[in-house]
Length: 89
Image 1: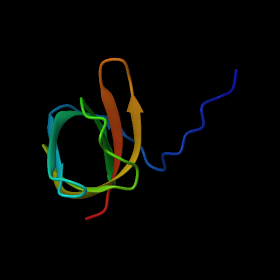
Image 2: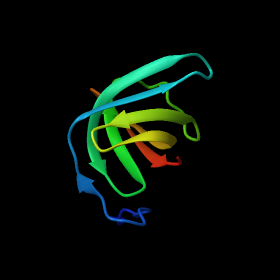
Image 3: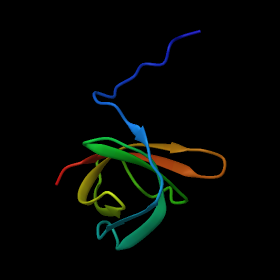
């Protein structure tokens, strides 16, 4: 069995609460979901939208912060999508 390679450079902690992300390109869209975990420079959310793309910059708001974040990765699961974000502003 191969060990899972961990790319995180800082610790994350479990989090809960509503998250809202929105963007205007390629077309205006708002996505609502739930926080899964959070770190100083990023967060992971669970939601129902498979439209987010790696590299895409979105506006965000959750219980601990608001600003701009870049989509780093998406994981499409059977009943939901998880997305990891890096806060950029």
